[in-house]
Amino acid sequence: MGDNKDTEYLSRLQDYYANWKNIPSYARLCEVFGIASKSWVKTILTRLEEAYLIERTPDGTWVPTRKFFERSLAQATIQAGMPVAVTQAQADFFVIDEMLIDTPSKTTLITVKGDSMIDAGIHEGDVAIVEKRLTANIGDIVVAIVDDEFTLKTLGREKGAFILCPANSAYPIIRPQGTLEIFGVLTGLVRKYRV
Image (cartoon, rainbow, N blue to C red; front, side, top):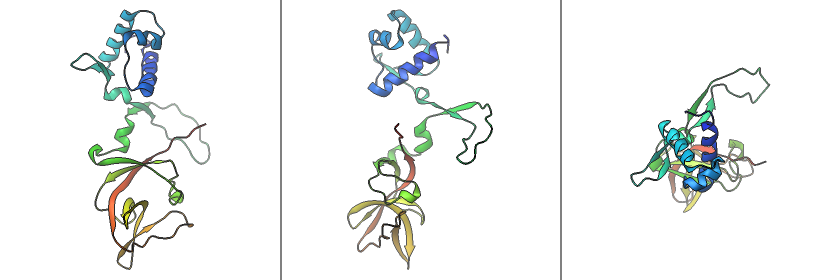
């Protein structure tokens, strides 16, 4: 981007968009950017447009592009065991949706309730990313409809029949008395940590 402050302007615009889901008027952007001139706001927006971060709709409204939602992903990994030496690493960019969702039209997000899958790292309040499918493989974590109720469990097989296994020893294996339908397969998980 042009001006060395454009990265800061972009960050402010991204924060505003995260809160309000729109790109505001020039007058409001003067406040967001901390500048007094609407013509300077237009210059900034033009540079963001030239960097393919925002674009205009046919009716002239500014909207974010896919690139607007890219987040940096360091090429280095982070050690979850013993500490290792820090090295400088370049960052790639990606859109979180692209990492978690393969087929948007077949994907639904479901908030997890309960702790029956805690040992699989799935906690109450997590958001399960589920790709709707009618079939699954043994060992897949699935959203299943069992006897007219939804549940999130690992699909298993016992004596030729499908079962649903919890990941918490406090819960029993579910052996359906009636029907068991697969609603979808867990493809990702979102958890927000708060301080």
